Length: 467
Image 1 (cartoon, rainbow, N blue to C red):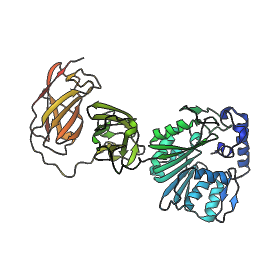
Image 2: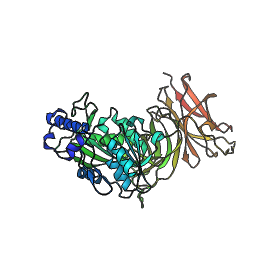
Image 3: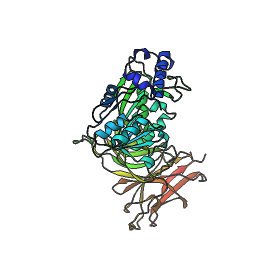
Image 4: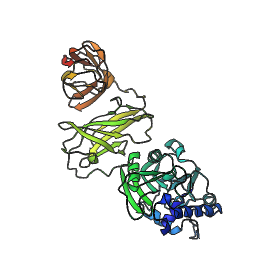
């Protein structure tokens, strides 16, 4: 993989200024690089343990400067680092010198990296893999990931960044060609697409995002704190964190009360790895004017960006988000706080259909629950029309604790119906969500509930007007 625009940018070649994809001088400069590589000139300059520098296409000063532009810890002892697009290995060897266990990955073998590794035996595991082949299952996960000069070579940039996110436990450092004008930052959040060889005469240059677009892609891929470190001569460097900032030591707001976390498709806690599903969180907060920027969602400790947040009624809110990439099958814990509060409760979701049965049975009281309210999920009324997106939401009190959805039975006029989801609100109060059957007769109907095979509740009435 040739990363031709890198060194011209770091050398600040004035003849590159202008529209890169349409600039003959830019194309000529890239092709000169290709010729040098074909004559076995190393791509990266390399510094030997005794300080000797083997010159390559990219000067050692430029490589040192790029690393210095990112907040990479000086001590990486005990840390795992992944270098994607390792090329000659300068970055991999630099990370190894800081004490890291390094995995270097590129789609083709660079002979100079192999030779350096054989001569000096640094702690670098060299793999020949495409980005499409990377996953936690194939290479594991890493504290830090370097993703320099690769993104615009890929046909599916957002998918690639999702893969990088799934491999990252803490922070990824992303560097890319960008299509901003040389003299400043574009206001556009967009990407240029290069169908053939429009950028530098190379057929593996596919996209030129603006710096704004690059940061937006990183957030959309699952990184929650994204910072532009530099924008210089059509190169941009971005630091991407997977975790939120620490909780406030002196919170100014009460903790959020998380009511439920469910799939937007089914209102259930089960999610499917191959479906485009969204995480919907229902919660209570005393803070009056929440926006998406105020919220801090976590799944298993990894941050999740809020997409849309809205008030339902009173202190009840709803927020939608994407699940973080790379969740393994099984149970995961969701937490929520605001920027001004600390985490409190968590809610369980399940990736895949498997759910472990409760190991310790919970004794049933046998007492009937007490229905408190009923409403239409669309308009808050007690009238239902049979719309496909309509749900019957009811609240009830029960002396039974730790209820599971399958332990609550519901019926309308003695006809059983199933619960879409069940969540505990607190102090013995529960919120149940039901889908009414399509063959329900119009008129005044009655809902009843029972838990763990106990007594049926007293009925509560609602009106059904069949479409």
